[in-house]
Image 1 (cartoon, rainbow, N blue to C red):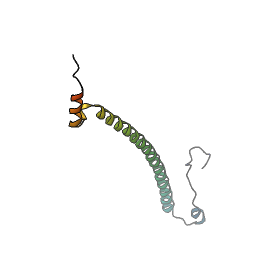
Image 2 (image 1 turned 90 degrees about the vertical axis):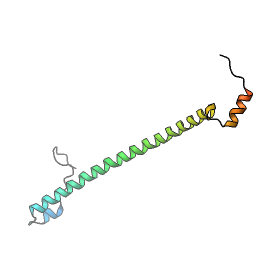
Image 3 (image 1 turned 30 degrees about the horizontal axis):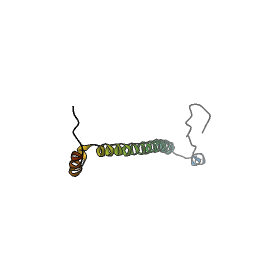
Image 4 (image 1 turned 45 degrees about the vertical axis):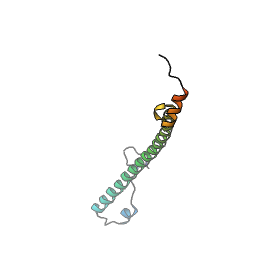
Amino acid sequence: MTDNKGDNMYSIPLSSDSLDPDANPDELEEKQRLINQVLELQNTLDDLSSRVDSVKEENLKLKSENQVLGQYIENLMAASSVFQSTDAKSKKKAGKKKPGK
């Protein structure tokens, strides 16, 4: 990394460039292009890794909420006469008086 503003912080001098006086400018340009592409792909990978981590966290949170809601629904169904078995309904009706209006 460099302290100069405006410089690419990932500009990497290639040792083979300085050793080869006959280096083709097209080859040097291609190497720089490939280096830039690799750096861009690394940044993309970092972004995707961060996104995966945040999605995992959200997934765990939603699983927990679903468990709570599932338990709540089970409790409501257990407390409601609509979801009781027919044997349970007939026992309840025989044991209870209808409330007056």
